[in-house]
Image 1 (cartoon, rainbow, N blue to C red):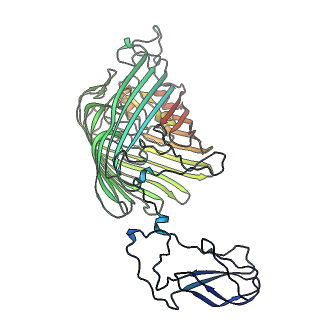
Image 2 (cartoon, rainbow, N blue to C red; image 1 turned 120 degrees about the vertical axis):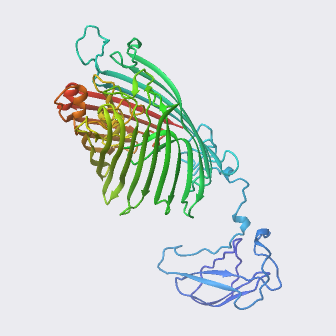
Image 3 (spheres, rainbow, N blue to C red; image 1 turned 30 degrees about the vertical axis):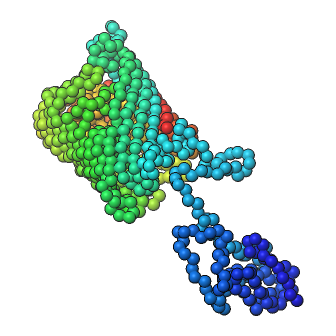
Amino acid sequence: MTRTLSTDSDGVFRWTDLAPGTFLLLVHREGFENLTHDDLRLGAGDVVTLELTLSPSAVSATSASRLPRMPELGPPLPAVTASASATTYRELRRRPDAEPGQGIITPEILPSTQEVFLEMPDRWKVAMPEWDRYGRGGEYPYVRESHWWDPFNRNRLKGDEPIFGQQTFLNFTATSDTSLDERRVPQMSNISSAQPGSSGYFGRGEQFALSETFRFSFDLFHGDTSFKPVDWRIQITPAVDVNYLNVRELGIVNIDVRDGTTRLDAHAGLQEAFGEYKIRDLSPNYDFLSVRAGIQEFSSDFRGFLFVDEQPGVRVFGNLHSDRWEYNAAYFNFLEKNTNSGLNTFQPRHQQVIIGNFYMQDFVKPGYTTEFSVHYNKDDPSVQYDDNGFLVRPAPVGIFQPHEIRAAYLGWTGNGHFGPININHAFYEALGTDSLNPIAGRPVTINAQMAAAEVSVDKDWIRYKVSAFYASGDGNPRGGRATGFDTIVDDPNFAGGLFSFWDHEELRLPGTGIALTPGDSLLPSMRTSKTEGQANFVNPGLFLVNAGANFDVTPKLKSFLNVNYLRFERTAPIELLLFESPIHNTIGLDTSLGFQYRPPLSENISITGGAAALFPGQGFRDIFSGTTQFSVFAEVHFQF
């Protein structure tokens, strides 16, 4: 019995209803050598799939492709002389008990290069096809049309395609930060009381603060992929701030009591203006060495314990060993800050800071990163009044004469996990000199320490944590050795961070021109201002114990709960300034509850808020009063 069958346009043929037995298969096509398979066995229920390849005939130069050969492929191979081995086949069988269609490889002719690849003159402008998988709308894998106002999809202003050429991009970022703070803090009535005839030493401490800050960042860079460090970058970020303060006592918004109890102020500053250049690549794994010069943001450790600021400087940075090692060497020459907004001015500060740090990933064990650092703070003698008329340098206590500070910090910090236990720690040793400390009334040598540690465990959607913070205090404020720890410009995210009353709010020391705590700092440093004053190493120090939890309520909503126990390490510096003794060590209990809500599940819109209360201990009552202090705040962030 002989049967003849032709293939379809794809070269596929099928025979069905064949009886079991042995068959002879002959395949013929014009221009190709015949293929013969003379021992094709077919059992009952078998499904046999053959993959056949025909070799061109020796007298035929016909191409197997239906399209002309691409020039890039070179000349065609010479014709092959017909032989028994020139024609091959491969037999693939399927088990009789297999499901229908299982294990069968469908034979097909491979398309030519021209049929697979399409040359595009500009890879950044590839037209996307229409997409409507279900025919009823919904989520799509891409958007065909882009708009300049849409930061989520392809946008030239967001660095998704070159602004010019093939590797030069512009990333424009605009942010709006609105913050409001309603608080009650200890406040003196001052000489010119807002309530004539009142006899209380402490007046009404209720205050309301509102601030709106706009930042516009223009980041022009030359590079390739997101993994490869940029070749060069120019970034400029101007900022504008409008702020309002309403208090209940005079002499707070300005040294001139005639300015009343409210203040409306505005300031524009340049927060970033730097150029960056990649000096060289150090390995095929994107290890590099770069330099950045100009006004730039820099944080010198994981939690912002010692230095966080935007200042002009030069920084050399890079990585090694496939980014397992990272390093920075930086020099900053400070600018003065605007008092009410915290933005940069263009007035020199007469302060220089040198920083070097080195990070090692997977140190000791994978998942743990450690950092070793050295900081040097050179703060020269100067006289400075803030924008509200108050003297901030030198501090107006004791012997207030211009003096210089030379302080070096040796640090070791770490962040990561050991198994299920998350750990974050820091230790700093401060050494140096102060030519004339105003509280000690003499030159002093500096020898102070700071230590912090946080341990946490994640259980489902809750992170439980405990932490402790220690800053050494000075027990002999008139001695020649200053042992109270102080930083350069800190902004710690620790023990509740901005949700904590003690960390977030400024507490002015009554009867002096200095603050017990300067705001956005854990340290009772007794300096006039964190940004405009000088470091003071004759201070009471601090011991803090924290217990708290972070809750991932939903993917969009997080909440934070913290309880801090606070006490001074030494109270002698406060007793000396207030002429009061004894002052006890216990500060009190700081409790806070906060939340962060991100409606679009991104950082483009976020709402952060919280409430905190400080329940005074005996030491706080000795300095201020027994009234419970509180703050309620909210921050709204928009980003394009």
